[in-house]
Length: 223
Ligand code: SAH
Image (cartoon, rainbow, N blue to C red; front, side, top):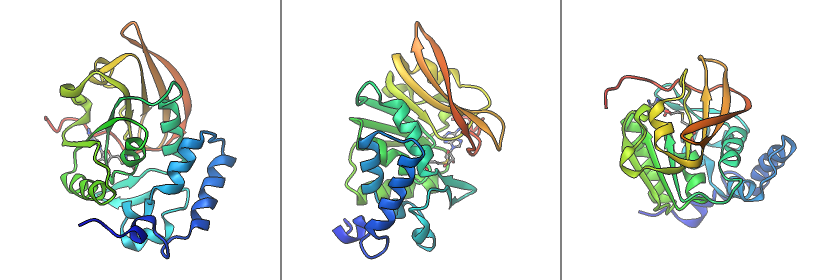
């Protein structure tokens, strides 16, 4: 069943003013892309967290989503999204680490099609319910180890990884189209570098974007 308009926009639960304050904060921190700021203003982040945390959904902070995982901080979502789209809207995007689905929902409103993989089934089931509720029909989900990408739909114009490996998985480089963009946090737990890689002649040209803290990209689920 589709949610009512008010439920989706969050009127009464999280006021427009709270959302505007978040967007202002992102602007102050250097996020300039108006498409992204508008999407963050209009995408109901409280739908992606437990009801008990809904009142904190428009704070610029990561929040727990269960199973030891988190919903990314809005600033980081904005920054990663901005790094993927400077040359226009990508056709096909692969996301590794769907989690609650917030980043996928932002991407789905920019790209033609989003493919997202996740290793924790319960999170994926709930993310799918949210996509349905919000009427986002261009997201395909798969329970799989993102270290191997999703070869079936490659090549991708852009790939975003929302959990941190210690090295960039080669499958992701292989599944990125020439000229395509990969945004990925790389490093040990606690502190990683957010990297942008642009594929040139089969290899990534890397730029460092920021320091971030993501949950680890788990390895070896064998899928
Ligand atoms: N994209 C989310 C952030 C989710 S946190 C957001 O919008 O907020 C990172 C997610 O990556 C977790 O749900 C975790 O289960 C998942 N993950 C970790 N290792 C993975 C792997 N090897 N393949 C796919 N997903 C993985």
